[in-house]
Length: 253
Ligand code: PGA
Image 1 (tube, rainbow, N blue to C red):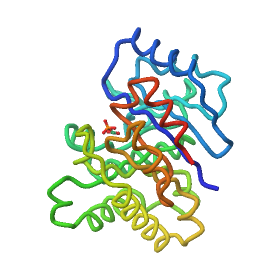
Image 2 (spheres, rainbow, N blue to C red):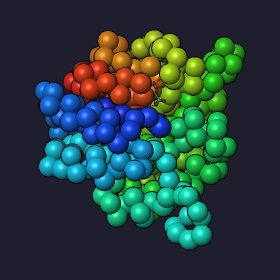
Image 3 (cartoon, protein in one colour):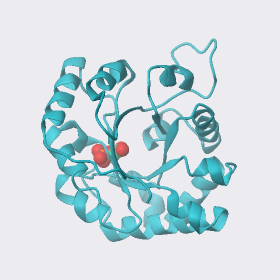
């Protein structure tokens, strides 16, 4: 059975002290993760070790980075390598969030390199894709997302692609409070799985977790996650509130 995942994306929010209390408050709340379920916290770089320490000994709960560089090491001031992240116990990295694509000019080609360096270091990339509003209004979201997948992922072997988690995040739903309907999420995520099946076969496609992201909150998580091709969520705003994110974890199927 493929993994069902609740992933928090803190983005560039919280001070160290606020981050500590958020994790403490969350861990104090009741949640139960079955063997096929995971909770992941993608936190700012300076908090990775602190959060990792707090999560030590917790089953199926991981800390993740929000980005990495394409190169192994060297004279790249200000960047963070996958090797560095691996050396502090990080096992997941968010790759290609729409904010990275938009504000930091990350292209499908650059993201293909980031996916590669993650996999070379046994790191799980949480690969983000999703269309802007103009594309959705023109009803061209399927082709748009298909191109993102093709250009960043289809060079991978069938074995390698099963180590990737995909997060579909329509840009018009991110931070806007305007969630895709559960049917919209299901439709495009079924399409993504079909595309993967066309490329790698059905067995491979059925092993890949596809998360939905974009204004997921405690009140809509269960309905969205209940869709057959939605394997959990990547959550921004609601992941900054312990009770909200805990309910989201408890909404995994
Ligand atoms: P949101 O962000 O939940 O605040 O819409 C989701 C994301 O950007 O991953």
